[in-house]
Length: 197
Image (cartoon, rainbow, N blue to C red; front, side, top):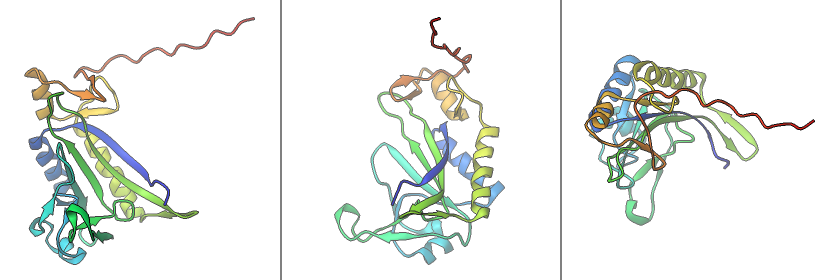
């Protein structure tokens, strides 16, 4: 399977910011939350009561959650070996879910979190599209983030209030180990190559 196409937004979040964002998505778009990438039980139980399903995170330094509507088209795979033997995992490419991956603070500071979703994937040579209702939902969720949080030095990243307070207290926001300032910066002028006569 070729890599699926993703729509995404980057945003600096603390744990409290994540809770507020998830609550806003639940209130405005009726999204429900699975608080980890691995869960126990089947999809029917997950759809009925996601808050009661046991979950596990995948790796240290990152908190991953899935957001979906009641009755969403979800595909899960049961793990048969390794540390998650017996647990199931949502197939992000084939399921109608948004995924929120929050970076936890590290000695380098706070990296951006990412809210993303795939709108279609490739099955061999066939392009499989998700439902138009889901594609609209993804657009609404990303628009909500863009309209709710200001940009920073990178105009394609957003900063939530808790992350902004973290930076104002002397914490470091970074992306790929490069420090990211809170204030938007003017666009870099484009230098055109010199053409000789």
